[in-house]
Amino acid sequence: MTKQDIPQNSSIDRRTVLGLLSGGLAALAGCSGGLFDSSDRGDGSAGPPEKQSDYIEETSIEIVENGRQLALEVAVTNEIEPSSVSIITESGREFSSDYFSPGETRTRLSLTEGEDSYEPLPRGQHTLYLRGDDVETELPLELGTTFEFEEVIPGTEYPDFVDGSLAMVVRNVGQRTDAASQTLLDGETRSDRFVPVEPGESAAVKFDFLLKDGPGICARADEAGEIADINHHLAVNFLWSDTVTVSHTIKYNNTDGCKKSLVGEPEEVITTPTKTETET
Image (cartoon, rainbow, N blue to C red):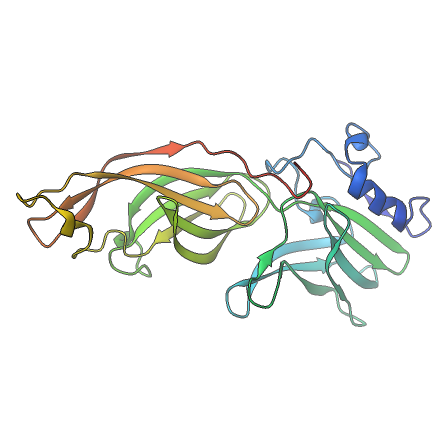
């Protein structure tokens, strides 16, 4: 994709751009002068905004305040005088915006909204809208990427993990940063925490206490004190990418304090991709 820096005297004005965002994406497919490559549907094939514009030096996703709020940090080149930057959703709604103070070249845009819910920016092909002296730039902003499952290992291999935890290791094989947001055990939430994963990097996402020894499921052992091995579904949800799910068997040894251990090899489970904001 070619860089899409639009000077302020461009014949494509603001209303036209938002109209294209909300209703005309399909018409842009295959057009070298279009704002979007509509073949890019979150599979990591398109790069971040800094690869689309000479005006933007860097973008990164940051965890802020209480660990449940996220921000997109945007750094622009000092060759321009930026005035404001906004995120416009795929449906044409302004999600967040901020102004640059004189001399500033870096700012943060919220990627979550709601005082208590901290709902993330919806999935979809959004826009980063940068304005400044003699500059007006509309750039594709899609935060989804592609994750691959690597392995499931006991959390004892990670010093900062609590005793008895289990770790699923995933790798970001796309070109955008995303964050693990939730773990689920057999469809039920196990934990909620953000774990950002940069392109080309791997991260261990933990399931707290899943392998912790002690009572619980072993209380349902039969009269002989035996309990069958159980195959569990372990899932990691991401903010803007498809869920990674594996099945793995856990052995429950009721003869020695209900010790739990992994047996066999994990098997990845194929799930239905999540739809974007405007897909039906």
